[in-house]
Length: 81
Length: 150
Image 1 (cartoon, rainbow over the protein chains, first blue to last red):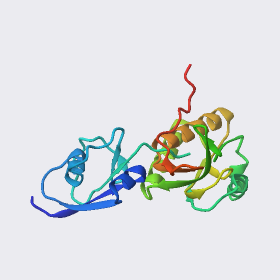
Image 2: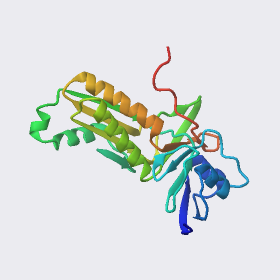
Image 3: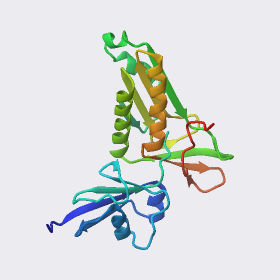
Image 4: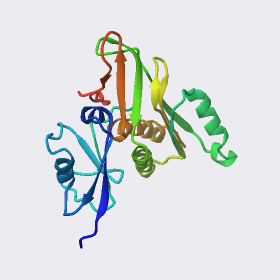
């Protein structure tokens, strides 16, 4: 299957400020884990320690495989309450 | 009920209004209400904090809070629960979070309220940025441990 679909990548809080943007978009052309997604949109930057990742609003591990149309989010440890 | 709000709120007014809208037959079964209210301090790590900005992840935050509430419902016998969390710009003494649990018996109410609050702190995507007197604004790195270690 060579269906071209957009992936949206979101960043929050200190990570958003560090990267200087809140979102990235790209077209999925091969099978990718969320770890691959990070490397694709931030090729020069190693993911900060303790960085969290979510796909479609749920926490996932770094080896989770994304699908066309997924929303991937990276963010630092949460500090609510 | 899960609620994320931009404006300041009085947790006691919210509690009273929420309980009032419950059906009388439900209210007659309430034997225990447990409440946690978290407010903004004017200090952190020995610094004077003048204000904070609370960011969240619209969609995911509500979903995670909903999952936490569902877990509490599975684990304890509850009549209802309420989680209200403030976002945006906040100032010392402002209420940041309200967690309330209604049950027939106190054990369920106490334990579920603690669980909801600790799970919120660990899982719900909110982030605090502190504006400290005489310094650049800084992001809070992580939450403190909720349960005391013995």
